[in-house]
Amino acid sequence: MIKFFDAIVCVIIFSACREAKSSDAAEKWSPQNKYWVHILKEQSGLEDGGGEHFNDIQNCMVVKSQNNDDVIPADSIATPKIVDSMTDSQNRTILIEIGNAITPSQVESVKRLAACTRQYFPESRFEHRGFDLADGGGNDCTYLNILLQIFLPDVYENVVNITEMAYKKAGWGEQLQLLPPNKCGLRTSEYLNYNEFKHLGGHTDRGSLFTALFALSDTKSYRGGEFYLLPRDEPNDRLYYFKPRQYSAVVFLSETYHGVTDLEGPREMFTNEFWVYDDAPWNGSTRAENSHMEVFVQRAEETLDHTVDYYKREDFAGLWPYEEEVEDFDYYVSGYGFYEDEEDEFDANEDEFYDDEL
Image (cartoon, rainbow, N blue to C red; front, side, top):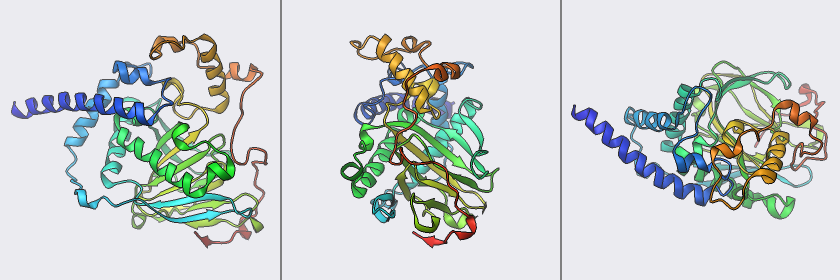
């Protein structure tokens, strides 16, 4: 009985603190949240056709936190620092590696949120994602966007800060005239593992500006699984290979060709992509296409009352487009990025690749 009472108290305290902390974080760190902030303010709106799950996710996080016996001492938290960078043949910085980019406790929080997401959104927010159009392979993806901002605002804040750190070091504002991360929306946030896949085929994150990839696993826990990158216009199509250190982040320009080599063993990653739009609404927030978001934004601008304090769930009814509506729409942004005017196909011969270390 005492334990049950303690659990109830814990949930109540957690709810109050989370609401205050989430509200503050949303106002400060997610100015692009206008299409989903009603969920935070009303403590409801996390639906997938199977019911409302705001309280379910919140309580699930509490329970899984109580069941976690791993106590991370405060002195284990180190200061993030830039440990490496990569430039292309035109002397443009395309990648920054940052050590100590995420704390062990934050890693555990991300894993808890991913587990709770799969529990309550097993179909709409989890995908056994094969890359059929690339070089094969794939990953098991749990989509965390919006849930991350609401339930783990400190982790979201850290993702923005780490990406901003790379942005400033690389000079992407001055050199490439790209928006800073804190002015971009979060296109997708994903917890990834490769339990059912043995590699990830080469591809680009087309339509995003920056990709921030956080390494959650110890590199000793798996064999292979090297992240590789092919800078555009690289002489001889030279690939660069490396293993991101645990708790480090690799931040790169999203439209740079990349993938993961054959691997054995558990490999867990936490990836986030930023784009020029605001955060998508809940029903489009897994990994929205630019074309869908462009149609949605135009409809929202034309139909919503922009004088209200915040939009409500019912305001968005019918605004997110169906596939056929996007195809018939005569104006939308198909993609934006550093390589927007260049071809997205690679005819490189794998036998000619060089195995260079970052």
